[in-house]
Picture 1 (tube, helix red, strand yellow):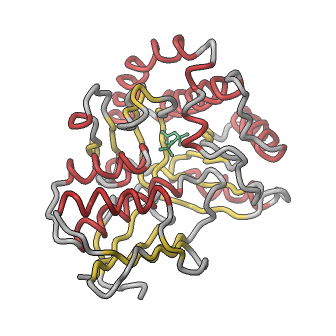
Picture 2 (cartoon, rainbow, N blue to C red):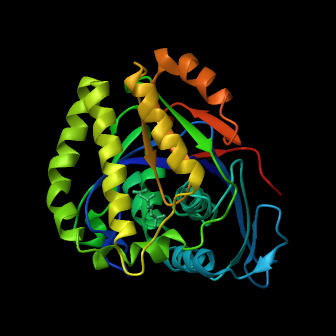
Length: 325
Ligand code: PMV
């Protein structure tokens, strides 16, 4: 059977950086995210006797047989379904990959939903999040709708994600400002392994439960300024861990730093906007819907911004009828 799924990358407000179990991809702490409406991965999967091996095509690249982590995911799904059928997988993003825009979260979420349905498994949302997590940790947060929490747990069965507020709970907008098209030189999954080499990692971990609880309160009460301040402080805290790891990880470019300073300046001028950054140079700017036009007007005049995506908070992964092959 052929199934197509669409998933959105998610933006972590409280981030996952470092794992307590590498093999199971158990994060060192819980995290909270939103799904980003205008950015998508679409993935079609078909299992069939006519395929002699797995065929995986990502973006415009030719079909390559057997491709690492993805093939591993297919093996896992075959095992769960007790099947030995090979699959054809075609996946496309409508946004750049490997630049820190979390394409692995939407990629593994869409693959998990499409492949498990195509092979005939009828998994619950919780089971889907666990399966997606094993492909790329943050992918578990792209399965449920809206505002999502991935809980802190010490076993695989308890390390799952769930919706804590629906998509329409609060009109927050996330503008992604692409400041460079350069691909990152250290992939996120490699970077995650270095977190614990930072002398500040233990201090970060000690604060995480309190940050999670504060974040949930600010979201619940729609209290934008403390929310934004916490989002920004959390991103800088995570990047401090990266910068002080051995070897050090510096994901920012000149454009990243220039825009950080610019956003702070706009804030001082009275525009409440806050930034966060993942493993790449591009910046996410969070703003209340009422201030979106004012922010866009300012962004248009910045020559080093190559592209923007304006996202609302969206639902999670879903099955659709239009196939890619
Ligand atoms: O799930 P991974 O291995 O791609 O790591 C995600 C890392 C961050 O995006 C920086 C943080 C997060 O929680 O999404």
